[in-house]
Image 1 (cartoon, rainbow, N blue to C red):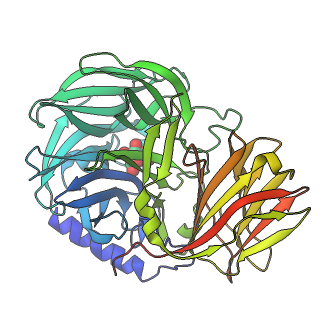
Image 2: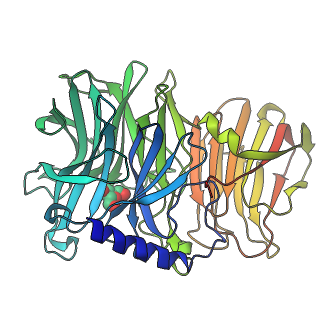
Image 3: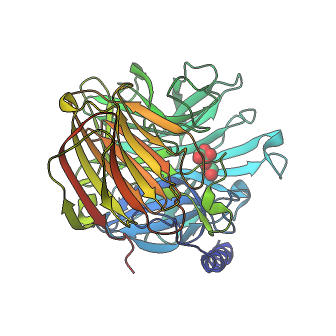
Length: 491
Ligand code: FRU
């Protein structure tokens, strides 16, 4: 694989020369240049957090998949590592697709499981895919040895990919997504006692939605006394506020134990209600926290940075997952993210009257805004933040809509990229918002992560202001702070 990796590094270095940084993330993980999608191989290995991701180093479009790599000791400051995988064996001829990583019990070897992808006709998906689960190992997380196929699927299945592996006692478990012979989206479960020989266990889950023909990137993990299955169904139709994106990610909750069936206790819900959240993956940190990264990107809309900026796609902030009593999955930025704050401006308590607005920043590239609203005392129809606002009037609008009882991101007046709005229901008398604005994106966490929305936002040239406004009534603000954030990159 050495030769393929050297070629890929040279390609990414050449593209890097063309990179325009106007929208390039400051505090989100992205490749130096080229395309990225799903987070892969999330793990803590040899005292470092390891984050890999689907990567096409040759252009800003999806193409034969490689794995990019970054690592960190604290999940705050990140080091760029060499590209970890390139297609180099027959089984992964057309792509080293998504997968996961687990350290061996002695902590000395990192085992990676990924999907080896081939187009059945050698060119495109028209005649289906040949997909198998492969294994590779590394003693440093940087240099990998491929060991080839560990799980072959029934040849007639068109989709069979994205292995996620975990260990319980002396047994390893692997789930991945499949499209059954009658076009149903399923999650398959395999087991192993030595990490190398894998046996079919069961079909763990079949999506009850008959439109869902494939469940991409399943992840299955315990939270409290429940098990959460996250996955990305391909095919479901838009339903009200849900499933508005070409690709959507969500979860179900249930009970499970080794050898038993998964018994679902909560119906499928979206995990993130923004425009750009897909293919999330979790891992367990050494302190037991369940941490998740998602991909902020899009397969169907042209991403504004693709045309001439030399890069496309980034990962979300790392989110700690917990489960509420009613089974709602809470995703809040991990505490370490606060270490990115390097200056804070306090606005305190204030009330904005009819049609009033307040400029919170004249020019901001990387900020976190904490906004607490007293909803009982708020009479405004909407309270909003115009972010990435430029002198020509373009901006993205992050708002609370009292009539709909929803928090939303509206991109209709954004300078570039997909238009439209997304909104998620919130409840209670108070609304706490944490809004992260990077150079080309917005992540909103409402009520300590009970609701999340993630969307691109590509501003026009010139200073980018942030303006708070109150529409048609009073906005009762009980807390307001703006933090500027530093970069995550080591150098
Ligand atoms: C999801 C996905 C995975 C696949 C990978 C290929 O975004 O389609 O199912 O392994 O991306 O890049």
